[in-house]
Amino acid sequence: MKKYIFSALAVAAMMASCNNASPKMDDQPAAASSEGLKIAYVEVDSLMTQYDFAKDYSVTLQKKSNNARNTLTQKGNALQAAMNNFQQKINNNGFQSREQAASVQNAIQRQQNDLQELQARLENELATETAKFNEALRDSLQNFLKDYNADKKFDLILSKAGDNILLGASRLDITQDVINGLNKRYKPAKKSEASSEDKKTEDKK
Image (cartoon, rainbow, N blue to C red; front, top):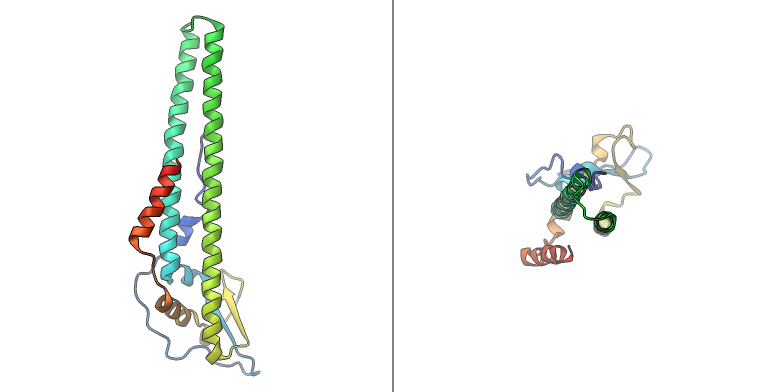
């Protein structure tokens, strides 16, 4: 039988190397280049592991992923048991007629189809939630940088992810300054609201 594996959409990667320390504000953020063009960059990996909003949402996404995986595993095990029982009866001539065997086989097929539909629905829900998070993260970052840059007057602020920027002077790195500013603005959702959302998710299953 096909094993149903739920994709977590790389949520685990977002949770890796999470730094719970509260960093201090940089005394001297990025300076102007020798050409007069003010450029700065923000480390995306650090932002994802130190921005409280990203950390909180990562926990939520991971919980949704785990719940979905557990649900699929339980239903997959039930399907496998039904298939094993059916095969055992076939081998031992346990059905009174071909019609009875066909009826059980059709029921198993419907059970398998339901499981496939459930898997697709849960994966789509997680993908939608992840897209919602990405949009909220982008909006919060852009809104903060708009205010932040009113005084800093940078001509260009880049995002550094992996090796998309091969080399950059540390004086151009405003990551910690941005993270501290974002965390200062961040207002976490109430736990009661989060619990209510989790209950809604459970009720859908």
